[in-house]
Length: 329
Image (cartoon, rainbow, N blue to C red):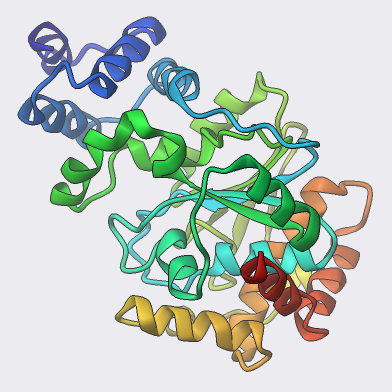
């Protein structure tokens, strides 16, 4: 590790092979915690390269508990986190709305590191039991249209990194890896990022993959469609910029999206939205993101129709029924 750190401190970058080897060694606990913390800190001070991210991703996927379901015609809906906006769990709620609209969701997520309530925090708070038992997850996917892959159960080799990330308390390159190392390899991906540099990085990486993806970025720094500003969407075939009004929504204020000061408050807000008791702003933000997920899977269906499907899923309580089926299982 000393050689690697010295190389990085000289402002050099890693090849894909070097990056993969370092991450494998981190997983094997070949380095001490100070060395790992120093290594992670490098990427807080400079941008990660496509080759480095590709190598880290390859290592993570090689080391993960691969879990393939009866179909890979599913979507993962995830934000990178780290935008510092303290929003409610928009992406996770969008998963339930998307599943309620008939699109199967295999969400990969974790506890919040730089936020109060990550997807795992809120799902645990509303009664979901984490498992890596494929038969249970397959049953949830079949009956509820959704299942959740709690990252620590599928990336056991990264167990040693968790405490270091928690102590640092800020986003690291592992935040960037989470959205692209789903162990069930879904065909579709809706991926939210908090800056355009990261959007370009993911676009370069995913262009060569078999994944059909949509990358989202709101220009005021949200890693999802916040409806608080114009936003950009990127796919394999095009890039587009929208105003909220272009997709039939009013512009929101940042305070409309606040997620609460505790996990319990976030969970209460989460259930309020599913129960039809969310504010118009909360409902609009969730449905806008769910609509993009539905459109990612059904690209031939107009975005307008996808928005209608998302709204119907939430308003008719189909999304709530997804939750009920998921918890029963």
